[in-house]
Length: 386
Image 1 (cartoon, helix red, strand yellow):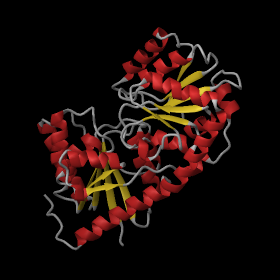
Image 2 (tube, one colour; image 1 turned 90 degrees about the horizontal axis):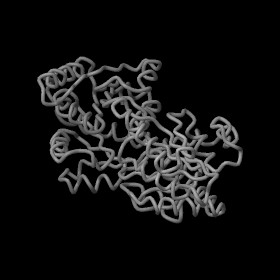
Image 3 (cartoon, helix red, strand yellow; image 1 turned 180 degrees about the vertical axis):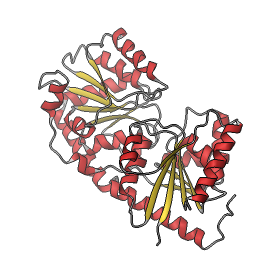
Image 4 (cartoon, one colour; image 1 turned 45 degrees about the horizontal axis):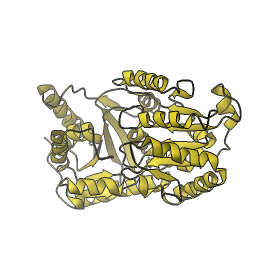
């Protein structure tokens, strides 16, 4: 196969689950088969710097609203870019990337892929219809969990176009021994302090309020436990962090909850905690869930989306109902009280990640999909460039 140039169209380059996956994929694509470019709707996030350092082209298409002449002009600009750069594959991500890029890309690119990575409870009914319409122009709708595929079929998507490739974890980052003392020392804590952590972008629907309520419930019985909230808000959601801090104070756990901000040592941190919690109200297949399991961290997660596809209750972790703060508190307390159970679940989780959720499997499956779709198109007439 000759070189194929790929354009990834993404809303931003913030540090979230989708961003982590497409950046992981970008680092591992076979350079003998693929050349890579990026386009974004907002040049936001720490991955902008990484792309610059790796000399991967990044173009920005600022769109304030899709209902504007500006949006049409930017879409026309995208079509010209695809044609000029002879891009073979356009791979768009999430609502804004799909709606902006998929229909115009159909005019110029042989292969167009849409990615939908959750069940989108934050979208309005109109937005869901608009995305479904846009995705009709894609050759494939790539999802990361069977739960998302089932939801899309129920929404009226063509089942034959939907492909499931689950997220992958780079296990090499989790092979170093845990440095629990260093983590606690950096946080100003005693060496034996029990830690319960949630790693998440700080946005609504992540169930962070439920974690804080669970912390308040656990306070009387476990006064030494500290709760870590690891992550940052997007530029548009900065006030939400203040809301969470104020809630912690009102619940009487302001001195027990540590908001660490974004950390670059998440694998080491997860390997050092006593319990990892994923309290989300909505997920497809969470990267942090898989990373917690890869780290061997005893994990409590809500039964949402594709989570049960990885975390099997009582075998590789503990599942609880979404939005149930008491259930979260009870599950965390159970793991704190029973170290042998916690160890068994953590080890079983790590073994499962090795078998089914490796990053190599994710990359190979995605590259094979790219190759298959291109080969299929090369047997049929290509679209005429607008």
